[in-house]
Image 1: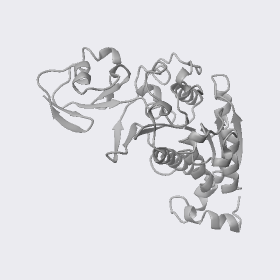
Image 2 (image 1 turned 180 degrees about the vertical axis):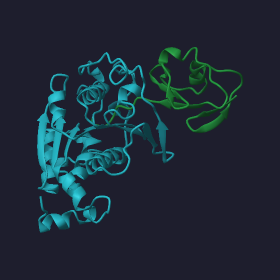
Image 3 (image 1 turned 90 degrees about the vertical axis):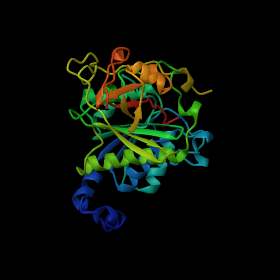
Length: 268
Length: 69
């Protein structure tokens, strides 16, 4: 694959980096990243990956754009209200960079479809807002041997960790089972500042770019936490749990599970 | 006893179990918090019996679900 003049210009700031170069840019253009959740985290992640020239982006989301989303979900605009989020996001990505092929799933990711969905991708970004989905993505990625970035945000706080198969802990090592519905507040109940989604979603995009280019050190084995009010980032070292039901020594979870979605996440 | 809790050195009177430390530190929803001691994740079932030792580094990991909404 050789670059067009337009690509050389578009990606010049990537290519000039010695860690990326033409070789890395080709890896990005051949790269395939699936973004589950085209919302707060997925919006900046998808936009930065599209801008960087990641050639194939998958988007999965069941929702439509709501006016209350626009405070943080910068991939959607006022005229997109009412459109399926994946369609609105696809239009933004195509306008940003026509090099990118976008595949969309307008629907829920479930135990039934998750494995076939992630199979075609090199890296998965968990931009979901609920624990059933987070555990589903974790388990499917561990079982299928796919790297992924977990992130969560609430109020002025965020967290991030990367899973690479056979390296370090998975999300279930950190949290063995989802909390009961309504036990832990969601952004809808607790609020969140839009820039928080920008910070953490951009970090997820960075992890995907590093992975595709094969540069640097992924955020495995540490949970990065961010407190915006004190402006503190901390890396908390975490190790694999031998008793982890999905990646431990004697796994009991061998296929993805649909946990009941919390009722508070249903549209009012 | 001196512990390093969430990166901060603190002194505590007498011996403490993980459950007692969660109470002293007023951790919200302690039943859903993951605790690591000296970079090892502790099983929830051991919270009530695990005695913290002088100099232990303790971290609390919280569920954070938001993002899409």
